[in-house]
Image 1 (spheres, rainbow, N blue to C red):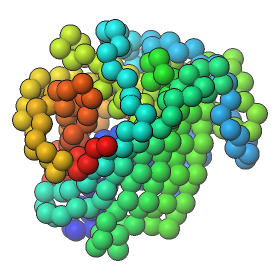
Image 2: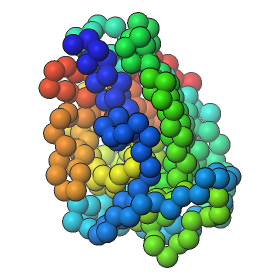
Image 3: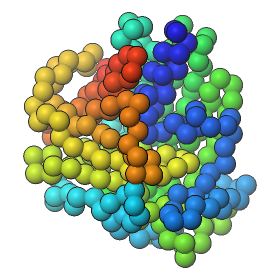
Image 4: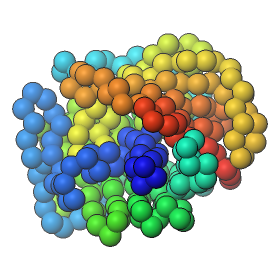
Amino acid sequence: MIKKLVRLAVIFLLLLLLGGLIYWKTTKRPAPVSSLPPRPAPAEKNPRTAHPSPANPSGDLSAAGPAVKKESAPPAEVFAPRPGETLEYEATVTKLNSTVANLKLTVNEKRPFGAKPSWHFQAFAHTENPYRMVFELDDQFDSYSDARNMTSLQYEMHLNERGQKVDSVQRLLPSVEDPPPDGTSAARVLPGTRDPLGLLQFLRGVDWSKTPEVRSPVYDGRKLYDTRATVSTSATAVTVPAGKFTATKIEIRVFDNGTEMKDAHFFLYLANDTARTPVLMEAVLPVATARVELTRAK
C-alpha cells in the first residue's frame, strides 16, 4: 500500500502539470506519436537534436476536432512571467504524513525561438527519502512557449525513473504542411496547443473575474488532451509552508478523446496578488489526497 501511494503521489504531482503521465502508463521507452486528428500518425524523428530554430507554428488559439473546442479568448494581458522566478514545492499524501517528492519551477530567459519571442520554462521533480527506495524519480521538463499566448514551440522531457532514462525533445507543429526542422523530432498537434508548463503560465495570466472557463489542448509529450479550467472559488484562504494566502481556486478537468478522466479531481490555487503565484496544486484521488504546496518563492 505504501509503495502504491508513493507512486500515486509522484505521478499525480506530475499529472497536475500533465507531464509524465503517459510514460508511466505505457512502455518503458515509448516513441513520440502524432496527436493531430483525425488520423494519428507516428511523429517524424531524427536521432540528432538541434538547437531551437524556427518552427513556424500558426499560433492560432482555436482548436478543431470532436474532443477539443475553441477556447475562451483571454482578456488583455495583465500578467507576464518574471525572468528568474523560482518556485519550490513539496508533495505530500494525506495517508503518508510526510514529504514524498519536491518540485521546482523556474522561469528562465525570454529570447527568440527562431523568429518568435519565447519563454523558456523548466520543472524539476525528485522523490525524497525514504520513498526513493520504492520509487526513485529524477525528472526534468523544458518548455519553449510563445511569449504572446504560451502555445508550445518545443517540449522536452528528460526522465530518470527507477533507473530507466528517457530523453524526448519534440518540436510541436500544428500544420501537416510544416516540415520539421533539420535534426529534430516533430509532434503534429492542434493549433493553440500548449505543453504542461506553458499551460500553467497561461492560466496565471487569465483574468478569472471576467473569464468563466478556459479550454486548451495540451500535449504531454506523447498524447493530446483537452483541458477545461473553471473558477471554483474566487477567494479562499490557503495555508502552505510558504505562508498564508488568499487565492482563486481553479478546477482543471482533463478529457481524453472527449471522455473525462475521472480518476482524480484537480485544483490549482493562484494567489490573488500581482504575481498570481501558484501556491497549491491538489489532486483528490480515490484513496487519498495529493497536495503540492509552495515552500519558497524567489
